[in-house]
Length: 416
Image (cartoon, rainbow, N blue to C red):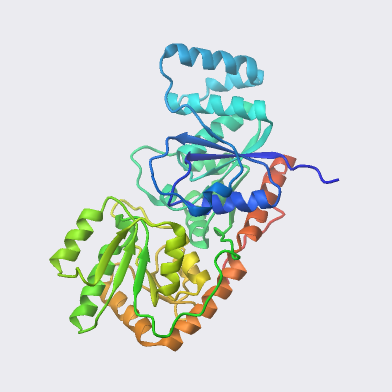
């Protein structure tokens, strides 16, 4: 008879979020392997569109109290903590002077939930507030924590110190999503980043089945939030350049965000209303069909003025898994996926002329698109299978719970 694995608590700032498909994929892979999960969300849901497969997640979701209503509520929480947590936890509260009251209150609530529900280990996504709360709660209840660092939490210029160095040092293990991130964190934080592994975000390859690209396809597709780091302003300028070369171009950009008005103005100013469509958010099933129909998928990411950038966009994984040829920019870990001349075309960021040339090359050469489609799918199958990658993460948890802490039985896997 097999024993049920120890329960893992996922700590997330908001759950669910439409842009965080990789978290839903990861949880589903764990559940398929029989791993018990509890999800803890720190902030309210703000979105109206969600992943199609969200309903398959069986894990219960606890929404921690965002802000206590009054001092009496805080006092009641402290009394619960004093009676429900180990005696040493009370002493630890005095060592949390650098933490906000909101973070401490949520950590107390989370620690109590872990104690009551036999949660053996906490795992957070993003090294900001979710890891702050997971770290405090783990110390209070006397268990370990790990976290996955992505991109904004590593590169964004926050006004307040997120104490990423302390989190890296204290965690039983830290995962990040690209070799680029591993190298950056090791160079910046030195010994504090000693417990660090790269595990790529994964896909359900059975859901994203490969198909050869249609040789007569003509449309350009891009998908993502309408924010600076996605580089859609560069894509619109590249379409203008193609139009001015005498080409008939159709480009659809799927997603919503703060830059919708700006991008609409850019399209109108360039008289590109018939060439570029801002389609707004779409269900994932519809996006998949749009990817299958496109001649080329464009991912023109840039580093934002505030340092924010993408890590390894899930939409690129999805497009390549489906067989859609991709043009992307050499930002953070993207060249590990879109390997220039092998699995797609990878160009410098912020260069509309280079983007236009790469798109034109793709549109004009069906054989090139076919070669990239086949090679791209092979790379996804080899490196980005969500079940394989989720198993590596569970092995790290197993080591942490067993007391080894470092997950040293799993070597860092880096791109060839």
